[in-house]
Image (cartoon, rainbow, N blue to C red; front, side, top):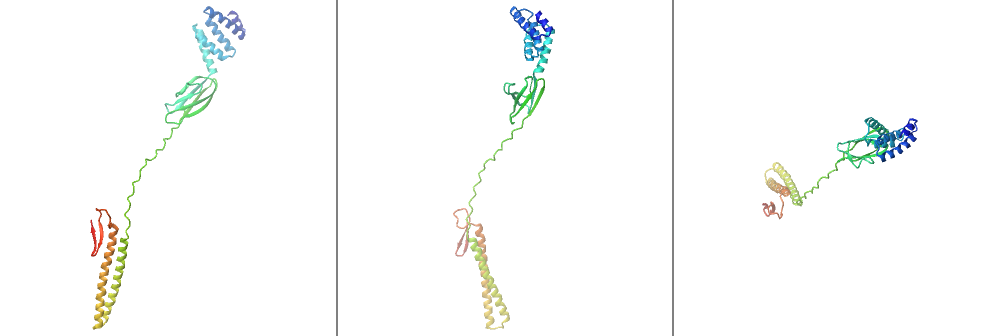
Length: 277
């Protein structure tokens, strides 16, 4: 240990480290109380040599042993300084609340978000964030030693699938009543007969004018007879035409000869038409 101290004072750190490791083996085998001091100085030599990772591990091995408080405080400060130089600080925050984050090489699967670690080794990391009802999102991040990096990831909600409208079966259309030719026959016949009545009316007017212009006698009596005949025929034809037209209109609304016993029926007869229920 004395030889190691002289080498360390001469800044011969490799030689001091070699002598301290030899002393460590002797002290550990003898359970000598100088073992904590030896390990503390091994860590100091490694730190002086720039072998930071080895120095950090050596300080932690020293810290596992009981020792004087002043050396413990120095070891604590050295550990903090080495960790800041060796590692990066990485923090991940997520939206919405309740998301889970998974970082390959850093987390044991998916863990609650937000997540943070101050002991992340430099390098690239893939971050995956998931949440119920949202599309997952991933992001790659590069961290550097001694730096702090914060990553904010916001998930987009998943659009609800369109719900198809329930199938509604259309009510079957009731078959329409077959179109009967009777309404058109009735209306057409009524129009023709009423037209003939118009002709008779014109003839009656003509005979009336002849009666007024003919002097009394047989010729006037013949003209008067013709007038009465034509006038009577016009009245009859008007009546029959109107009846036929009315029957045609009724045929549009009243089924004729259908089998439905509850339907009203219009039946032609020798003296006109009969509506039966």
